[in-house]
Amino acid sequence: MSEASEQAIRQAINAISQSDPLTKLLQEVKLGRMKPTDAGLRAVTEAWLGTYKKVLETSGLGRTALVRLDPSPRLDVLIDAGILPADHAGVTSLRAAHRQLLVEIS
Image (tube, rainbow, N blue to C red):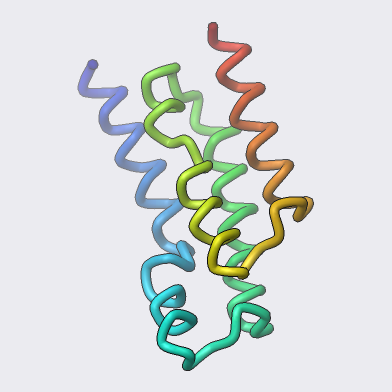
């Protein structure tokens, strides 16, 4: 992988990580300090979904980068924790965008 590709992946991960609810807020839910339906958690999660989708769509990433940036594992954790329903519009939209980009690059 070229240095430019690796740099693009790092920038994408950095942008996505800045609003990632798993980093700090999931632990609060697990400890019972925050409910999965908390309005603040919902706002952070919604922002993260939007950021993730925007980064995927605007970064011009190659196939290898897109595979590395698959949102499904993180989405599954949020769904399993009860923070997002599996049929949430943002979840389905992000997954569809990721799949579509992989198809377009193939």
